[in-house]
Amino acid sequence: MASSLTFKILLVGLLCTMTCFVALAIDVNPLQDFCVADLNSPVLVNGNVCKDPNNVTEEDFILRGLLTTAADTSNQVGSNVTVVNVTLIPGLNTLSNSLARIDYAPTGINPPHTHPRATEILTVIQGQLRVGFVTSNPNRLITSVLNQGDVVVFPQGLIHFQQNIGEGNAVALSALNSQNPGVITIANAVFGPDPDIDADILARAFQLNRRTVLQLQQRF
Image (cartoon, rainbow, N blue to C red; front, side, top):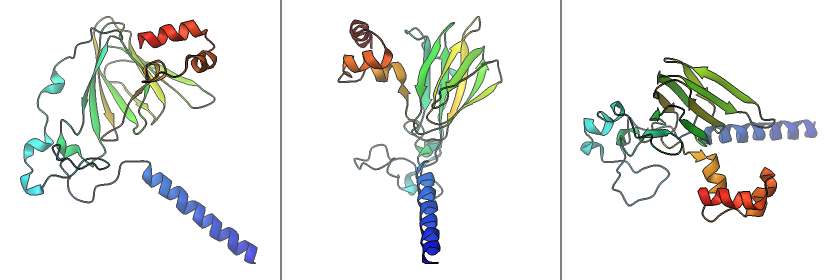
């Protein structure tokens, strides 16, 4: 009887612990109508300090015109991401949302990357994209071709990418369920951190010779 009671207590404790972890895995829910970010505050918190509600205006919730302009894609990957976050719309603070416009030159890519704190939903506004993401071990590639008006979901934390396979420029609009989703670009993170990851470790991990690893580190 005592053993059965102990088991039930442990089970309840485990379920409570799992519930707490789930609750902590997303942005904290707001406790008021809004918490407009005070971007000038010197106080450091997990997010942004709230502005005095009496000083809030409609402009704290609006960003005008930025996403109507195509970004410069004349770079090595042929794409550019225009991020709309709490820095540009202070009213987003604590609301667990951010947005991005992605411009792609012909053959341009948004290289493999992850968002550690957000799921992404991407809509093709113009052009044709090949998109994909990779599942956790055992790794499986989920990939498809999207046309104008098509939508894809990239689950939180999984490596994903897009490639413009159309004849002209492409544009996508991306929504993420965090005010600060974070981004880890895989190639940059592996070959370009400061300081470098030891070349012998990378050579063994990627089954490359050390010279090739050093050349890649110089590029990134």
